[in-house]
Length: 78
Image (cartoon, rainbow, N blue to C red):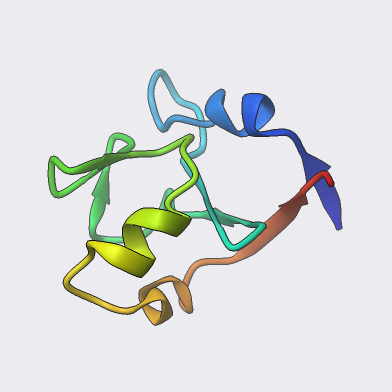
């Protein structure tokens, strides 16, 4: 499994042809093809390339299982 730093993930912001990656609980998910992510943005609230762990756990109106259909492409380096 590929290891990323948060800085490396931030480059995958879904813009200019880049893939769109987000982090949740140490896993890196590819949300590029998810219907709720458009050009690296989710509902105008979140941007790809970020760690969404806190947002999903505390603020989101849905559970983290919303990422179940998105492939895990790596993990955050410890």
